[in-house]
Image (cartoon, helix red, strand yellow):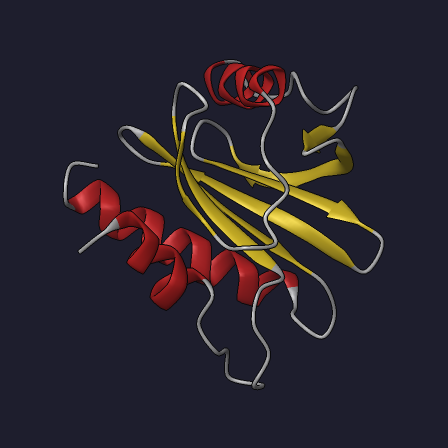
Length: 132
């Protein structure tokens, strides 16, 4: 299965309420895009570096915020070293670190934070099980 298929079929899937994530992507730990939805705001190299730093040193993004494609998200609860969650207005973002990738999902209403977390983290857990 191609990385684009994971984005198209597993991240941009229809949710229980008929909605879907606004955008999604899979990036390598080095900030290289592997696959992304059409509307995903490209992750800048310095943003990818800051995200990876927060996975290694949890809490470093909290004072400055999490940036994706220049958009700032307030960092909220996550799983230190594994999951970073951010909020912006009625939307937000979930990032799951796998063995060699970052799975990213961005949502807006009517998608709930829980729905985004479930979709992103489920794919991330699967990729970890597959040694990705």
